[in-house]
Amino acid sequence: MSTSSPRAGESGLSQPALHVLLAAPRGFCAGVDRAIQIVELALAKFGAPVYVRHEIVHNRYVVESLKAKGAVFVEELNEIPETAQPVVFSAHGVPKSVPQAARFRNLFAIDATCPLVFKVHMEASRHYAEGRNIVLIGHAGHPEVEGTTGQLPPGAVTLIESQADAERFEPEDPARLAYVTQTTLSVDDTAGIVAILKRRFPSIIGPHKEDICYATTNRQAAVKAIAGKVGLVLVVGAPNSSNSLRLVEVAERAGCPRALLIQRAADIPWQAFEGITAVGVTAGASAPETLVEEVIEALRGRYRITVEQVTTANESIAFNVPRELREPAA
Ligand code: SF4
Image 1 (cartoon, rainbow, N blue to C red):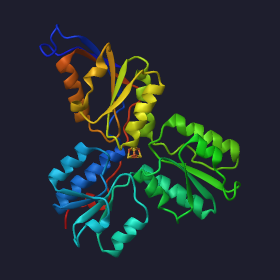
Image 2: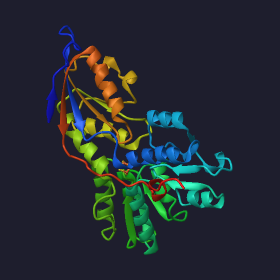
Image 3: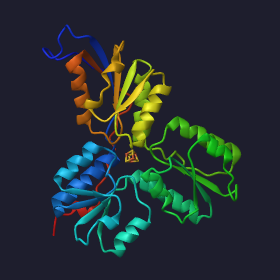
């Protein structure tokens, strides 16, 4: 833990005091960092445009800054003209049909799927090859769920979103079942769903250590550590960012009366600060630190703040970018 006082001259004594607890780890994970690097390196090596299928990571600020450098975002490959320029697949992973379609069109594809999502794809494929029905614990419509489901033929994967789904699930062959999970789920909710599946289907096979990634786990643990000490938690992240949404839920369940998702400082709901003397701040895995700094500066503009960082884990994970981007241009 570390504490810093208000910077001299920046927070007047007439302003009300506010203690800010900053959760750590927060913000960018290794998979997001790698995906952004991939687009930036592709732009540097091959020039603009670099096409990106889906938001490379779920954050408008990141997407807009890459657009300004020459990235062109599309939802599907059929929006891309005939081109020799690269097309990057987002960190969330893609169904198998997408690289197949890219090969068919001779597109130059670079895959920014997070290695931890890729690991889940491999697990699901292995279970399928061994003749098991696959349960995927996750949220319908999320691109990661579509990508994982799309590794296997239609009907091979059953999506379970809740404990009620797990209670209702009637597999074809209860003796040949395996589960995998989305990487950005609530650790506690997922444990509840897995417990039901294991009770109902004792021979179900799962990952040795759950598929929820280190970054999701660490950010949830960090927000839990501050949630009971503040009257309000601000989670910096995007409304379509699964791990940011989970941080809001985790903060409230861990004892904070109110947790709110904001995309950046302009969204701070100042009316929610009524009677608040301590606020928690964290950020989802796709939110850059610059947006957290912007929030802290906005708080400093209205309050005499003291900032205390509460660190529950130190992260040193980094992933290599694909080989074609490590090699110098021909
Ligand atoms: Fe990879 Fe986890 Fe980051 Fe998703 S949240 S990109 S799985 S490290």
